[in-house]
Structures are given as structure tokens and as C-alpha cells.
Amino acid sequence: NAGVTQTPKFQVLKTGQSMTLQCAQDMNHNSMYWYRQDPGMGLRLIYYSASEGTTDKGEVPNGYNVSRLNKREFSLRLESAAPSQTSVYFCASSEYAGMNTEAFFGQGTRLTVV
Amino acid sequence: RKEVEQDPGPFNVPEGATVAFNCTYSNSASQSFFWYRQDCRKEPKLLMSVYSSGNEDGRFTAQLNRASQYISLLIRDSKLSDSATYLCVVGSGDYKLSFGAGTTVTVRA
Image (cartoon, rainbow over all chains, first blue to last red; front, side):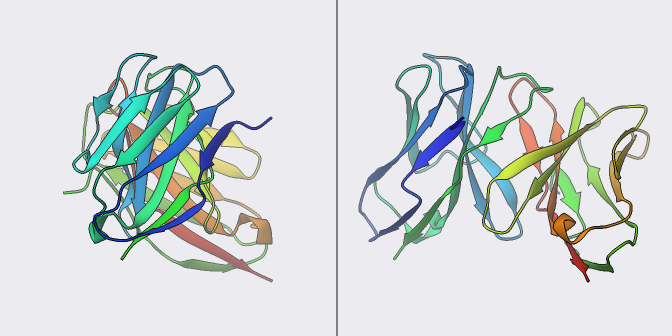
């Protein structure tokens, strides 16, 4: 059971480069999320998609865009990477965007922007 | 002020010991509470939900104090495999889960 799959696992970018982080889930979940995790700060929500066809900003959306390609896939794009975007990125999904549902996470993408 | 605050630790305890730690949350309208576990450089995974009346799952006990706005996690009879970072997570809206920065527990032989 794959769960939530993220690619790539590691990436180094130069300032100004662009890239897309891919995420797919096979649990037929309605809701998907992108978080970033920085030392001492906990996970912060970048964008989320409550259901197929909808996306909304989270706490820290600046510098990012997302696409909910279909029910399974939710991608995160950095148009012009900055060193401040060096972080670990986690994709997650849940059955629906309700408060009491468990979120399942992918293995993370470790991104370094130099 | 952070929405969810945790003592980062580390809590360094011998095998078999009991360890307990809290987290506080700022939004009094919060309605759902969880503890997630995160192993080094891995993804977070749900450890347990926290219910108003408190709940146990094996060696783990979670408590919620709405009046003082904190939740706690107690681990009894610690095992080496309990070494991890424990994330306090609070739900306050349709989508929003607020994560604490985590409390690190190290269990030594």
C-alpha cells in the first residue's frame, strides 16, 4: 500500500530556478495539503485542496503555486526559488478536510536552494 | 504568539521510565487534538487522537485540559523504540491543523 508518494526525495536548486514537487495518493482521499517544515517551527501549511478542483492558500503561500491535477495528484511549484525556501516539504492527504480526520504524509522532499 | 507551543526537550530517560510533557494552544475555539510521532528525517505519523475525557492507547495516555488550553502525553514503561519527536497538533477549522515544533524524547538503555 503506497499511501502518499512524493518526488523527488532530494533536490538542490540555484536561486531563481524553478521546479515542481509531485505528490500522489492512492487512498481515494478528497483533501490534499502541502506543508514545509523548518527547524524549531513545526509544519506550516503552504496550500491545500479540500476537494478535486479547488485549491486555497495556507499560512505561507508566497512564492508557491499548486495544481490539483486530479483526485490523486497535487503538485507544488516554485517559480523562482529563493534561499528562504530551503526546507523539508511534506505532502499529505486526508479523507476530507475536516478537523477530526487523520492526515497521512509522504516521505518528504529535502530542498536546498543555493 | 505561536498557535501551538511545545517544550522542545530533549527528554532523556532510561528504559522503563515514565515521561510526560505538555503542549499549549492559543485558540480557545480549537476542537480537535492529536499527537503525531516523527522519527528522525521521516514523515509524521498519527500516534493518537486526544478526546475530552482523556484516552489511553497501550502505554500512551493523552489528556486534554480545555480550561487551561493544554494537552499532555504520558508514556509509561518507555522503550528504546519510543525515541522520536512528538508533535502536538490542534484543529481549529475546516482544514487547518496547527502543528507544534515538537518535543524530542530519547530513551536510553
